[in-house]
Image (cartoon, rainbow, N blue to C red; front, side, top):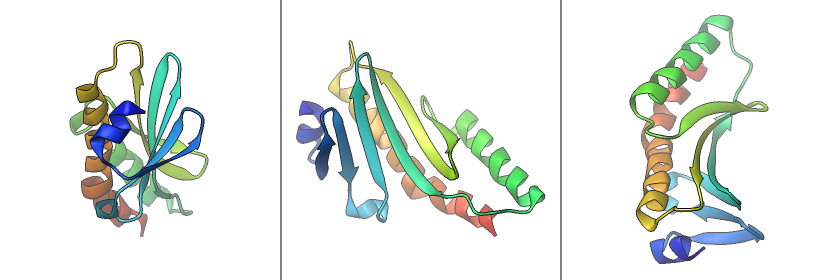
Length: 123
């Protein structure tokens, strides 16, 4: 929690060990940070996955995998129920503030830059 407070990112604690980060520059997206020892999980829902033609769905999944391999250092794009999410998981034992902020920055990149790229494949 100290890392979140010092980062000055607007947040709210929604449950013990669970915080929601929200910044106006993220276009309404939120990063959920959950600490369940020994892990800290960062998760952001980008959008609900609509019913797509097979070729569009394959193109979306291919792009997600390409971004996982090229732009996501530790995190990854994934499907959660019927939503596209980006997730990053770190061990809490030796987590320092720089690692915490790097995880938030990684998800911010996904929110700001990748959302539009992936959204284009939904039509």
